[in-house]
Amino acid sequence: MSDNVSAERLRLLIERIERLEEEKKGISGDIRDVYAEAKSTGFDVKTMRTIVRLRKLETHHREEAEMLLETYKQALGI
Image (cartoon, rainbow, N blue to C red):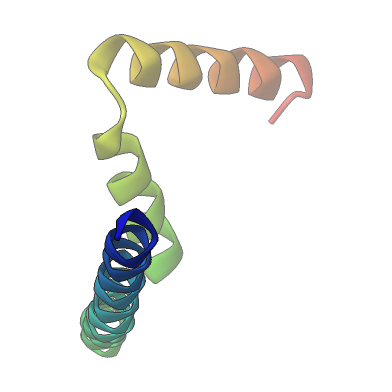
C-alpha cells in the first residue's frame, strides 16, 4: 500500500511540475512580447533587462554592485 501511495504522490508531483513548466513557457513568451513591444517603441531592451535585474536586488546589494562597477570603470579609464 505504501508503494502505491508513494508512486501516486510522485506522479502527482511530476504532473504538477509539468503544468508549471508549461505555464513558465507561456509567461516567458509574454515577457518576450513585452520586450519586443518596448523595442518597437524605441526603448533599449538590454538596458531594460539590466534595470529589471537590478530592481530584484536588495538596496545594499545593488549599491555595492554599482559602487564596484564605478570603481572598475575608473580603474579602466572608462
